[in-house]
Image (cartoon, rainbow, N blue to C red; front, side):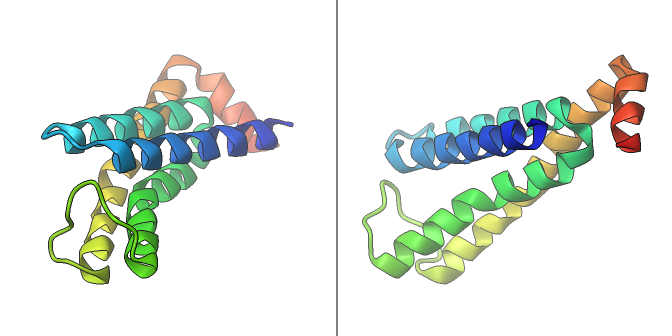
Length: 124
């Protein structure tokens, strides 16, 4: 049951992240998207420290994958990618780095706050 809850939360975070990136048309849209990315990754890392790597990897690559789909399908973007095309979308894979840092920061808070909670999960 915990795995289903975690996967559901991860998919909801990916959906929210892609949706916010897709609809944002202001000058601050990149910062808002990054804030959602960092908060989602940190919360998922906090919730399940053993799977912090998964949250960082999936959330960090979600925008890049979505943009690759947009480029492939020829869908209009709210803001242009530079460089244009699949190369520009692939550069968004760099968002894996801040997502991983945020996820492991959330995991570190859990381990520091409840040392027995993170070690008890490792035994299962």
